[in-house]
Length: 232
Image (cartoon, rainbow, N blue to C red; front, side, top):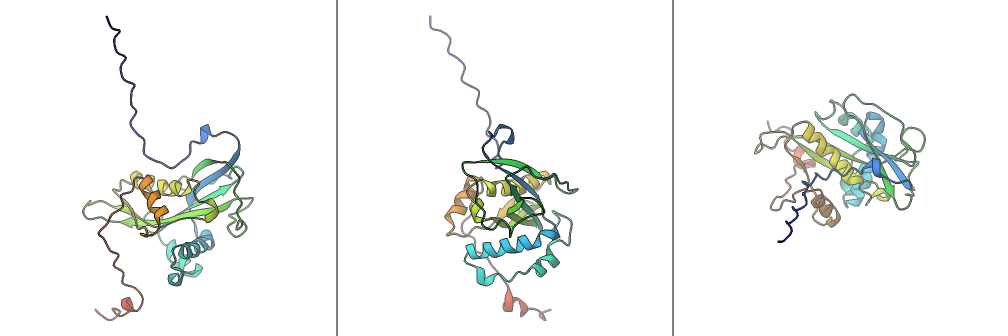
């Protein structure tokens, strides 16, 4: 008589790709303490520098006319998540000082690295005191996809400074936006990606993002937009 067959092992349902490392299981080594927090008007200088670096990376520097003044006058006129919102990613080789926010609980994680990161622009991106620096940001705002008949979030900027790339930090930033969308009961997170940026396309696909084809960007700006000033 044959022995009874063993039942198949239980298969756990896959979890959503949060992009957040498991801090509790990280061994001691080259650790980088990270935090995602809401940006404030005091962060405009860092945001402006990253926008400029992003424009250079995207080969669109000639179109980047943003200034610290124009950012200050437009970014922080409404409560977070009701209009333009920026998450900043801060990092430090040492534990980060605790901060609180009434609108968003900062997300803190420890990233385990094979080698320490050398940041040649650490002084330019110093945040507050000690050795905390800004490593990246994501800027997003509400949209309303009518086919869904529920709000969503549109990601305009997702940027990680060069020396911090390929460390999972972009996934952390996008995961924070996606988690906020779910928390608010929204039905979509949407963005654009340049068709030549194969690394970005690969990144989005790994995050579970659907890359759509057959759509074109329609933009009315500059002199063409100003021509409508007296149209009505």
